[in-house]
Length: 544
Image (cartoon, one colour):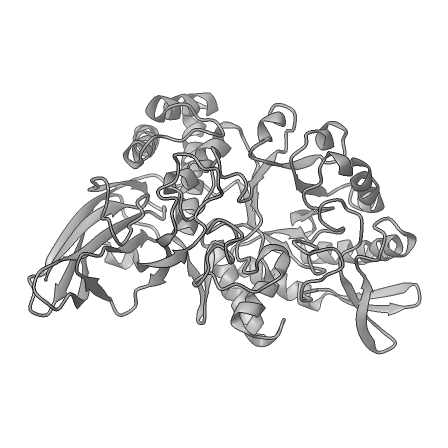
């Protein structure tokens, strides 16, 4: 069995039954960019055995700036919703590439007639100039196989990220999949590890469960308690211990996450009730608020007022009060205008100097002054453009026909194109509901994404998470890295804007790749990469 190795871009997805579809020889990047590419490999069928272990070698003057991962496959039963478009690579059940396992011993298994890939990603500050990367696979009794790519590093740096970006961080899912008690020392270690991976990949805001988030929960049910604020109730008075909250904030900041979104004050899809809140009362810990608690009722109103009276000075003492955003209720629709307005009124006065924002689809919430920082779903964000100055956007798995998304079955350019869209429309922030959601619909069952990446066929695979829960800690997905590539594209556009202006940058992008709007994407990986090369050429002209 002879070995074959072929370079591939970071936009390719290498399936077991097919190698790279295009040709790739390298590309350009800025000095501080995390640039991804791959080497795909297979065994050419011949005499037995039909497999071999091969030692992987990397030869480059920048080898210390390269991280290597083995791309593995997961069994996808539900790759799409019934309605899909031509932005998917495949629409049938099968094995799909997604998790990235760090390559520690540089040994891989080569199978005859089956393709795998090594994912390579740059790190740190790389010296400007031209750098070759040669990868070799050597198996006993076989001729070594090698392939090379060339990276051209431009003498310019990506600016600091302006985009506020959060994927909802689910602490209960970490405890469930790693089988550890909530807020045990092992749980805190894992929270730290998940935060680290998030922060390294552009996530600079984090869902902060002061109280257990009232998300994806059936009426009358509750999720495991992940309440960071300890509460003591004495009659109508409440006292608060912020020790766990402080630890969470400190861990986030250590990992480069400096913005915080306070968990929702009211229940999802209507703002009709209080979230689950537990407190110590008469020496006993029990739930004091929940689905039975009217959102704007006197007891919960009194509680929130006392809580905010204690919280805001505490956050000021930590120097982070201006880095907190606050949620009222998730995904209200038109019929919830009145209940949402009443719920917001409970906290509006105390939070009038701070950002209140929520994921929603109806522009009426902005037009009526109810939500001043709307997080508009991508399918209706156009209704807000030109009206809302502080505009965010978001998507779920439902925005998977025509719109950008990061499902496992989609072409990676469909994931990465978001950076261009955010730039053109001057979007301030991006939110997605699941960095690590490992439950089925409404949190009914725990679900291991290694075994069922589509939550037992309830979400198209990849909807609900970007990282995998390996026993040693989180494992990245290639979708996480590709999304970060899109954020880096955005930062490169912002750099060029300082030289030629926003409109000229958009004109350059559209000349190279076609119209940019919420439902458009350059056709083909090579066309997409050509847009970034055109952007880099302009940056080199003005800055290098």
